[in-house]
Image 1: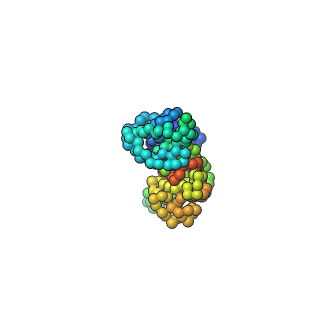
Image 2: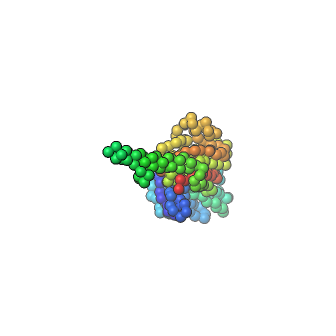
Image 3: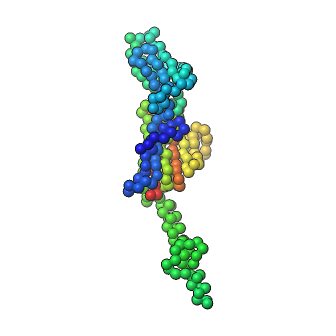
Length: 111
Length: 163
C-alpha cells in the first residue's frame, strides 16, 4: 500500500493480484492534499491550513466558516486566523470549509 | 522442383506463427489472434470480477473524489452512487475516464448520452442510482464523484480484469 498525490487528492494505491501475481493497481481517494484544522478548546479558536501530513501552509485563503449551521466567508492570513466566540456563551459546532480541502470540525462549549 | 515450391508455400504442421510465412504458419497466426480476441471480448463475464469504492463520513465536499483509479486491462461493468443526504438540492457529479479519454463528465460538460441513462441533468444524481456499463479499458480507467454539499455519500465501482 502506498500513497500518491494526483492533483488535489491523495490516493491510496494497492496492487491488483490474481493468484499472487500483480495484474494492475487500484487507487482511491484517501484524503485531500490540504486540510483545515481547528485548534483550541475554548474561544478563541484558531483555524489553520496544513498539508495532509500536518505541515503548515503559509498562504492566504478564502474559506467558509459554519457556526451552528450559519455560514460566513472568512480569510486566512498567512495560513491561519483566530475565531472569537467569547461574546456569547453557548454550545458551538464550527466547520471550516473550502473546495478540495478536507474540512475542519470542532464542537465546544463557551462559558 | 514443383514439390519444393509447394512445400515452401504450404509448409508443415510444426511451423511457428507468422504473418509472412507458410500457409501453416499463417493458420497458426490466425488461431492465436482469434484466441486473444475471444479472450478479451469475454472479459466482462469470464474473468476476474472486482469491486472497489469510497464512502465519505467526514463531510468534505466541493472537490473530485477518486472512487477508483485502475491500471491494467478489463471491463468496467457498473457504477453505484449515493449522493449527500442533507437536502433536496444536493447531488453528485460523475466523471469517467477510460484509457485517458473522458467518457463523460458532469458539472462542466453536458452529454446527451449520459442524460439518457442517468436520472438528472449534467450527470448530477440527486438520488441513489446505479449504472450497468460494458466499457472495455486497455490500460486504465478512473471514476470520480463530486458532491456539492457536506454529508455522507458513497460510490462503488465494479469491473473485471483480464488476468
